[in-house]
Image 1 (tube, rainbow, N blue to C red):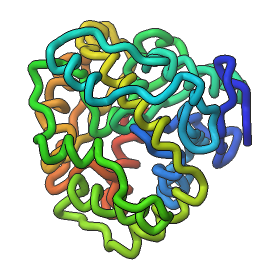
Image 2 (cartoon, rainbow, N blue to C red):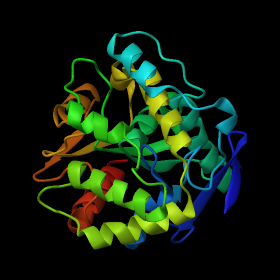
Image 3 (cartoon, rainbow, N blue to C red):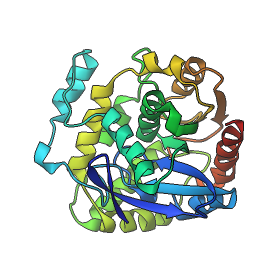
Image 4 (cartoon, rainbow, N blue to C red):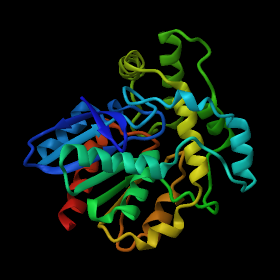
Length: 293
């Protein structure tokens, strides 16, 4: 369903009993709400949560910002690497306000929040700026953005910024399959046919590379969130893989050290994805930190 949130239109799905504990899932860079697999959502519903997943702005079926143009990622990357300011058409703080707007539209005063990758960055802003709306926080495969942390290799950076060789649905899907072969979990490799099926559904639903570029620039413009983390007063749980080549594992230890009372789960063999085999472990972590609230 389409809702008005923070003055823009966002596509939202609401799962489970209205009486359940509200849990807002915030997805990462360029990923639609489908990034939270429907079966994982049902796993969380089975734990007593009312699960809300949505398309971030500029992605999926939510409002686009095409009028802002396509940013120059090369120039943005150079400015970021040199420690210079990066201009973006919107900020991660704006996207955090979108997330709060989703809760407003659904009449939810407070919710547990789980963010993955860029979604975890958005969730950090949400907990810092509107702590009264956040019951607990789960941060998955994400980072504070500190410049002292190791980043991805040039190979991984190049793959993330590359574009499909062919513009057909099949070509776009194969591009994503190859990317996930690089950044996914080595201990829990997804079958290529499974990935092709998922990405085919996703690409047919929506394919907006310009939106991905604008989100990428928003991440670069946001920079280092370290300063806001010591002030987070909500129960927090950090989940990260020890084989994550996109956001290396020191980022998780950094987050857990900076956020007061945060718990940490480093998962052996997990990369930068959400393998089905680990869904029970993820759900356990989310439920435990929710209970702390």
